[in-house]
Image (cartoon, rainbow, N blue to C red; front, side, top):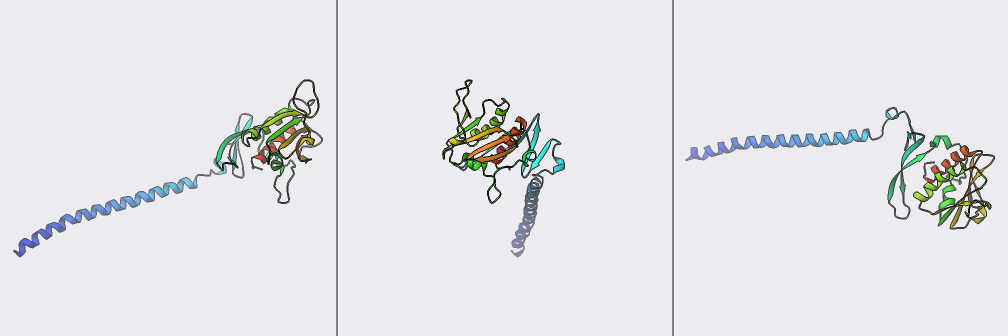
Length: 229
C-alpha cells in the first residue's frame, strides 16, 4: 500500500519540473522583450534631434526652428497656438530670408527686451489696414504680401489694402497712421532713409532704403509675429 502511494508522487514531481522550466523561459523572454522595447525608445529619443553635421547642406537652424532651402525660398514648420481655442496647428511657411539675415534690423522693444510691434499691430484688432504710397514701385507691395499672409492666415484678422494719398488709378481707401483706433490697426510700408521697424502714433511702420531692404524688414516683422524673433 505504501509503495503504491509513493509512486504517484514521483510521477507528479517529474511532470511539474518541465512546466517550471517553461515558465522561466517565458519570463526571461518577456523581460528581454521589454528591455528591447525600452532600448528602441531610448535610441529614438537619442536621435530625435539630428546633429548639425547630419543636416542637409542647405539647412539653417535658429533656436528650435529648422529652415530648409527650397528653390529661392527658405521653408520651416512653425507650430502656432490659437489664443481663442487653445489648439495648436502646424504651418509650413516660406521665407525669403533666415532669421540671421534680418536680426540686425531695429524694432521697438519693451523694458524686458521683447518685441512689441506684433502686440501693437494685432491686439484687439478687428481689421488691419496695409497702406503704402501709391507712387512707390509695385515691388514694395511684395513686402505687404508677406506680412498679410501671416495676419490673415494665422491671426485670422481681416486685412484691407489701402493707400496714403489719393490716386485716380485705384479706389482703395486713403489710410494713414492718423486712422489708428483700438480695433482698426494700421501697417505702413515706406521707403525711407533707413531699414527698420518703427512705431508712430500707434501705427507700425516698416521702412526700407529700397524695395529689397523693405522686404528684409517686413520679414523681420513676420518672424516677430511668429514669435521666432
